[in-house]
Image 1 (cartoon, rainbow, N blue to C red):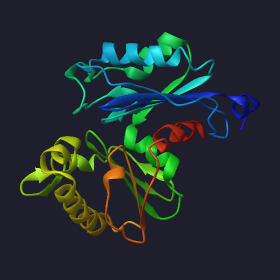
Image 2: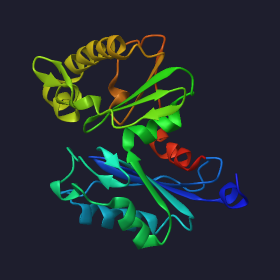
Image 3: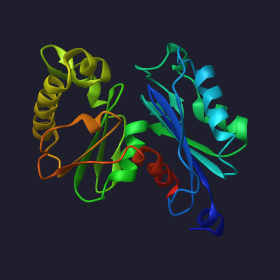
Image 4: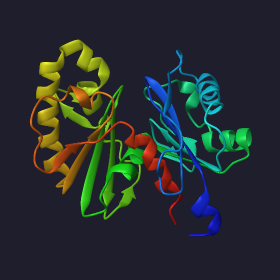
Length: 235
């Protein structure tokens, strides 16, 4: 690590379908500020969300670089899918836009990827799923990210995807009991599909889980999505 990287402050941003959150971390990934949050604007256009981010960031003090988790496929800082936001995001270069806004280096990844970077142990095959507005996923092999997994949009059961069966809209429609039954089936399906060593479950709706998880699975705090931002800058 260079001297600059050992003292760098990282602004981490977690863009979600229901909320936008920010925090500043020190070089070791420890919080320097309190997490700040606002509801995701409606409609969630890129202009409205970037305005919301700017308002949050104004209260976070100084920083040297920026990590962003976005709910969709991201390639080289450009948004390729945004199922739970607005079509205006498609092909939008978010990394360049934020670099221009703050004159700081910016790295943008999928939000489940960033949550996973903050959660995984770096041993074997580890799967991360996030339960929120949608259904996010990230896969890691010995700590290395397998990019652009997006398992949430793959078929799960009854002609519907994991996201259609387990996203927030489904939870509100069918209720906690049926949603939990579906989630148990999803975990069994994912374990057979990936043969992972460990499963991490995050997102705002993980608190609704009311069954005993398998021994190779655990719930991770929602703040992990921000804490993973420091990992984007590891050499």
